[in-house]
Image 1 (cartoon, rainbow, N blue to C red):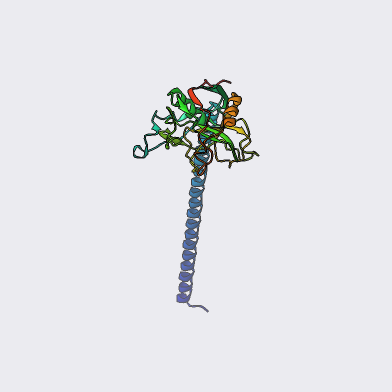
Image 2: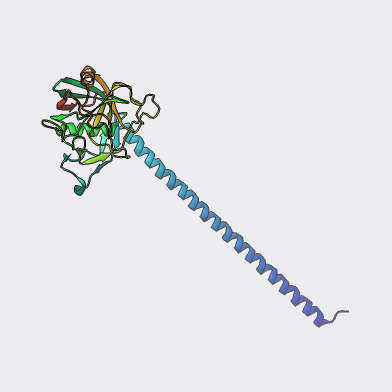
Length: 278
């Protein structure tokens, strides 16, 4: 038979085991609770983050939708540093950043040879149209000459240098513009030819974001690289441009960009942009 002391030791050992098991159970429950709370907190953070992200994205989308619905876009006009401006630069300030992206404007050039007109769609090139409108309102183009004619390879008449004025030609003709640049838009990447007869497009230096005030009128289909903003389409006066082309050029730029000064002089006495319609 088992002695009294042995029974007492066995009872004590059983109690100890029960206590240890209870402690282990409580510890396990605490860990489970902490894990559940931790997971819940993480879930709340994910949910909160998702709500924040959705709210933020939704807010941006709403703003974009509101901007689109209001017919406005934000344009970037980059000012040329004062120390980089030459005397051929004509500073007439910057256009406003927010501009209309709807409506059609009429560009009118009153030249010494007669009027030349073009249709400008704000939806296609809102920032360029805005720049042109700003410059026209400041009499920027008035009394300037179309300084370059190209008759071989491509067929274009280039204008828009405010410093190309007066009698005769200067070596600097073709280097003038406003005191800011803007990004190219409405590029005809899917068109063949990229610049068909009747297009009016913006010249640039060949570098992205270098559009200024100079533009060219295409009087014959021209397969240029699609790097030049299409501003609009000529609606009247193409016969004037064709007559200038027929008279030829002096080959002054033949060894560089091609072409030369038009032998039949074209002076833009006044250039205007109508208010957007439609």
